[in-house]
Image 1 (cartoon, rainbow, N blue to C red):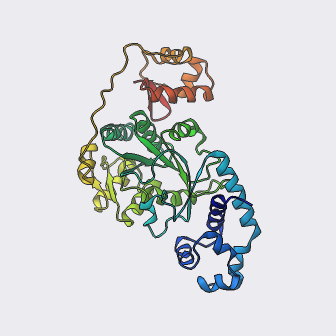
Image 2: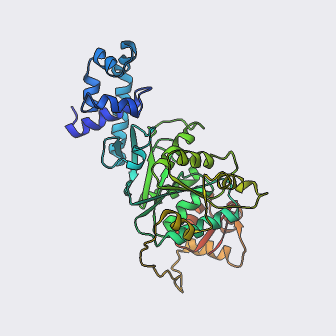
Image 3: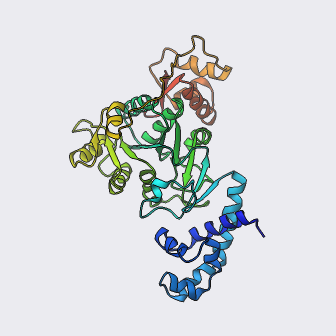
Length: 370
């Protein structure tokens, strides 16, 4: 028998796993049963009457496989120090809770406050241009002075990764919302980035472990990004890009949407341009515009950031530094070849050096000294 507080979480996980039982149904049930445990212990007849379903369907609350899976999820969460956030928990993101399609339960690993005073989503295409990278970097640089701000994105390649990396570099907390469980990282190339984020923000998902990587999960994930934030900034995207889904969802939630404009013939800017044209997004050119839109006027004291005159590099980092010295930029494959490091070794060191402001990652897996 689990302790009472652990038993509570176990049944909350189980309730989130019952098919076709969403937040609206759970709220109805909680008006008649005070806890998830009471719901599972109620009679099939009473449950059927409570949510107006047949007794045959109500028997899904007796499914032993659901309880078995819930036990496995609970044990994994305990071992991995993962927070289990049921929709009645005070630490559940309250902005998202106000959305009709909020999740019954969320899994979170990290140290961020999911109800921080200011929450900003920064999203965009997986194949960003130099313009998109610069816009994202300049935006976050300008926001690094703002008090109580967390940057949220989807841990995807492209703009998402740039946003997370720059936020870490500038000392901001950043949260990645995943389209799968916390037992893996997708894309795998962002594994080291994810580890950094869990010490300066965190990872959030509604999906249990062993969730398959299917396309449908990512639009589902996007609604959490939009719902937990005060505003969503779209940097670059094609008209049918995944970031556009997030922008439209944010708009449907009556949240602010902002977009960077681009050239009319640039496909990567066609999405933001369309949002601006339809008056869905406010046009911004940088942090000052965003601060005006959101009325986030107050700022923290500006930190004086100065690069040290003499870099304290490890022997391996020095080898990478020397390889990049006097080069405009090198592709990761070429850098691996010239430095002699394997791709896995190089990826970890590059991220660390990027966080220290020694190198700069460019689109197309290219790197140069910063």
